[in-house]
Image (cartoon, rainbow, N blue to C red; front, side, top):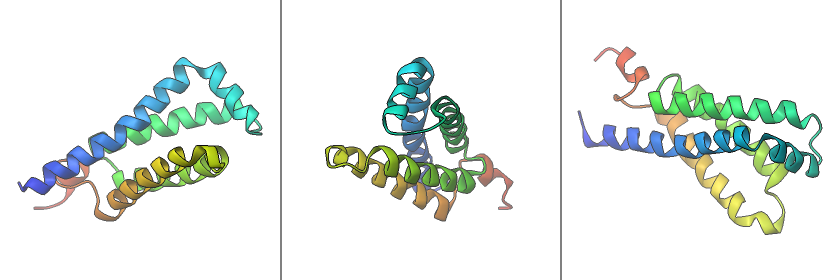
Length: 127
């Protein structure tokens, strides 16, 4: 096993942390999160908040395990594009916008290169 495989695993785990933390924050502050979403003109905020929790949690788990990671990364990129557009496009949200762009870059790298050998996806490939 090459050093790069450990780096790929570390990268996936680090990307997963922000999605797990975000899902946990939404779960523990559901009412405040839905109010924030409604303040940004989001219709059906409770539904979309619950959907975001599911997307972030399953996306993070997929990244950690390296299972169906290309699909998960692509879905998380699409999710971040929408989130960034709706919530982080104003000038006072510049750092959040740039953070999301950086995360999208990491996810696109995962989508392009896959999970690596230290993953459930990697175990399915013939060696």
